[in-house]
Image (spheres, rainbow, N blue to C red):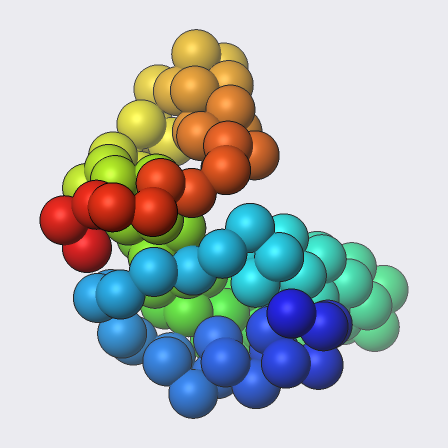
Length: 104
């Protein structure tokens, strides 16, 4: 999946928490969100806050779909609330290759 395809897919599935997202879709989306947030932060704090708010739901959705690809529940994103350990676990899962026969 290319950068443009990943962005289109994530905006098309803005609040779709079902299905699966391959690694490429997830990481291209993360790059896009990072670039948007850095760019808007350079312009204005208010614009940066609005961009963060606008990207929050699709970011959660693509994260849940990525976890589904490795046969985990999207609720595991709550591990982000555990500093360092939760982040490391989720980063490890995000780079894992998807399981082909899974429940999602």
